[in-house]
Amino acid sequence: MRKIVLIEDNKDVLDNTAEILELANYKVFTAENGVQGIAKAQQVKPDVIICDIMMPEMNGYDVLTTLNQDGETAGIPFIFLTAKSEIRDMRMGMARGADDYLVKPFDEDELLQAIDVRLRKNDFLQKKFSNNSTGLNTFFKEASEYLGMELLSKNRKLQEYGDQEEIYREGDAAHHLFFIQKGNAKTFRITTDGKELITGMHGKGDFMGQLSLLNNCGAYTETASVLGDTEVLSIPKEDFIKLVYGNKLVSNKFLTIISNNLSHVQEQLVDMAFAPVKKRAARALLDLNEKGLMEDGEHLGLEIPREDFAAMIGTATETAIRTLSNFKRQGLIGLGERKKLVLLDLKRLRRIAEYE
Image (cartoon, rainbow, N blue to C red; front, side):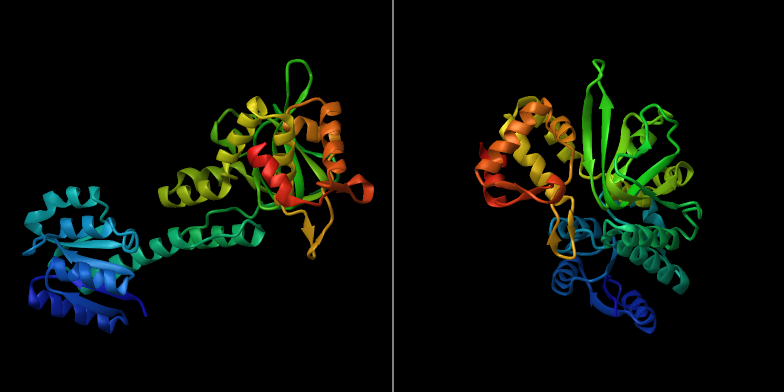
């Protein structure tokens, strides 16, 4: 049963509103002033707080500010109750983080609808979506239900790619966002002297192509090709635009999902510029390992061409091979089938990646 804290100094309004909410199957906790309301909210951790603005001892603005300073109550949907004469002051309440307000006298439908909207919004915000096709489709479904509209067309295609096959090429018209359902891929650019510069290594649950679509440049700014057999889901650009620009709440949630931890990419670029090769190589191996190259609980090793590994850490292929050979002699890595890299000592590799 959903819990609501109702804070109102007018006894008749308090009792009548509480009765409406209880009949709608909410568990209601009442308070006759702001001080009591704060204590009650901190005690029961409700799903929604409904609070009058003008009250003795502490007004609604101060109640909201106090609860927002408490990590356990900050973010709980907050609805103000206000008299018509106080509407001009509502901007202050919304600026402090209130989610909605109701003008007294309000009817039953207004009250219940306002609560339902805030609960659905908060449920959607709090939901965690896994980085796989099931989680992605769940996001699309729940975002559609939240907005009351179909967000995506039916043109999402799952395509299989073979080793080294390109998904898109730098300069191609950017018409799709790509999601890796299974396998791995790299993105790279070709420098002016013809060398390959890897801009990212991507695994199951990662997106590719989003920056090209967000930049509105009309073309992909890098090339993407797969490493081994890979399954990729494509999302048409028009659906991507609808998700990003159609609704602020859905947009923020979607952009969080597709970010692929861009701060980590920035760290990689800094490493390429300043960190020793040994440290860059250790970090790269750990990053590749964390991409989920595991099947049925058995580690199958890291299959990556040595020239790709060299491009990933920003060094010559010969230097990368020498570094890997040194790691092998130290017992940090080994070679499995088809010369796949197998990590033997994650603890020491992490130490090198962090401190050496």
